[in-house]
Image (cartoon, rainbow, N blue to C red):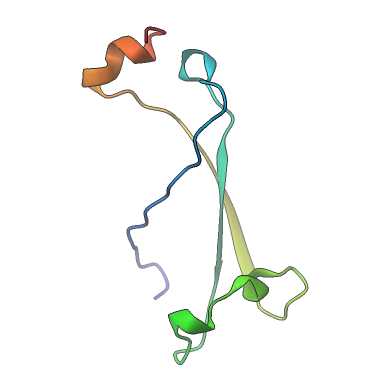
Length: 80
């Protein structure tokens, strides 16, 4: 539904190297489209998000910011 919200889970691949002092330039690309009321999860595939498809795709880039929890503050300040 337009202007509704949903929770999502994102699983990142491990980084090859730890970013210095938790700085990074990682981004997520979110893509969405308005399906018909009859669209089911089985109907959604990579072809829908192909730039050459007839679907109107909405893109949004989210910049990633690392935030340290209080229990890992030492590791976030450069410690291991």
